[in-house]
Structure formats: C-alpha cells, structure tokens
Length: 282
Picture 1 (tube, rainbow, N blue to C red):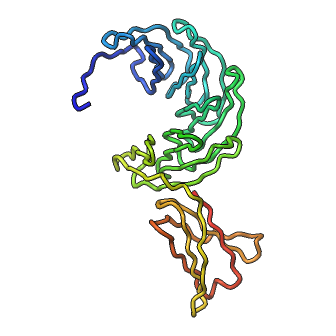
Picture 2: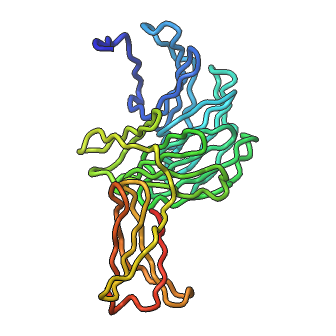
C-alpha cells in the first residue's frame, strides 16, 4: 500500500470517466454519454467488451444481478440490462425531476442523490418498472452517499454530514448531522467513524457512534424568572429551537449547533411566560 503502481489505463473518444463499478473481472464505467463495459481479468491489458452510447450524462453507476443502475444527470435513473456485457441494452428509466448525481443500492431499493438537494428512493425489484417509495430533502446538494445497515450517510456540501434512518424508506427521518468546516463532498463509514471528503478543509473524521435523538433535560427557572433549557444530542448536530404559548403556532426561536454535552439555552424572563419548547434536528 505504501508504493502503488499504475498497471494500465483505458481511454477513448469520450475520455471523461465519472464513476466506476466492478463485479468480478468486469468494470462498468459511467462516462457522460456512454456506459463502457471493460474486461479487467488481465489488469495490464483492459479490453472493452461493450458500450451503451445513448446515456445523457452518466455520472455514477452500480451493478446488481444482470442490471446496471446509472445516475444519468437531468434524465434521472437509467437501468441497463448487462446480462450480455458485449451488448448492454436499455431496460428501464425514471425521471427524478432533478439532476441525478450519484446512486447506491440497498437490496431492491435504489437511492439517488440529487445535485439540487434531496434524495429519491425507488423500488427496483422490477428493473423495468422502478417505483418511487420516498423522498428526503437534504437542504444542500446530496454529493455523496453510503449506507450501513438502516443508516444512510449523506454529504450535503455546505450542510455537512447528515445521517438518515431508512428502515422505513417511505418515511426516511434525520437522526443526526454534523456541520463540517468545508463543503462535504463524499463519505465512507468504517465502524463508528465517518470519513468525510470536505473540499478545501481536507479529510474530516466524524464519530457517528451516537445517533441518539435530540432531547431536553429537565429545565429550571432562575430567580430572575428566566427559563434555563438544556438540549442534548450528538456533538455537531444542528437544531432549530421552536417555542409556543398554545401548541398551535410554533415560532422559530434559535438555531444551534450542539457541543459535547448538553447545551444550555436561556429564555429571558420578559419572553418566557407560558412558553413551551421543542427541538427539530437538521
């Protein structure tokens, strides 16, 4: 590992390669208007097996069974039948109504990250008829995706790292986040650590062992009448504190980033009479 050596490379008229998937001795390349399939059984002499030249802007690709799933930019999801690597054929598609930037698979669930902000989850159990299951608004662009169990880790550029529970794909829910100093572009998770490619800020290593939901500890009212609130959650998680006097109209009151340990928030006496509070994670 300390001395990697380049063995070979493959180029073509469409030399820009954005994404790659490898299964066995075959590599699948997302190359803009082309999906190229390459035999890499001899790593010193990769050989093209087949091409699909009708993609629009293939940016990312994953392969499962006899199908390749492609994030195809403004055209959304492209599904190819690659049972014959020498003759890849169109098998299905789905217009995501955004800009499909990346994709991953979790069993029969395709999760597509959108460059304009958000996730789309599709049931691809029948590849020719993908069906929408759920959506999630990430705020910033969904630049990178990785999944561990039922936790989806999303890098959302200026919005940092977001952790989403997808145990029910129809109702994905945010369970944690960490605002990184740069623009979070990509993520990989190993054990309790997330490794985030953070643009100009380099590599950020985030402890994701705690994805506990936000919760208030018991508050108290000081002699001055001010209410002292204590909010607990994962360090680095962002939250909006809302308050109400009647449980009908909730006012957005504070935007906070949680430190290690509980965060104290003080509502002064002149504004805290008959107030109720809740925290919403970002």
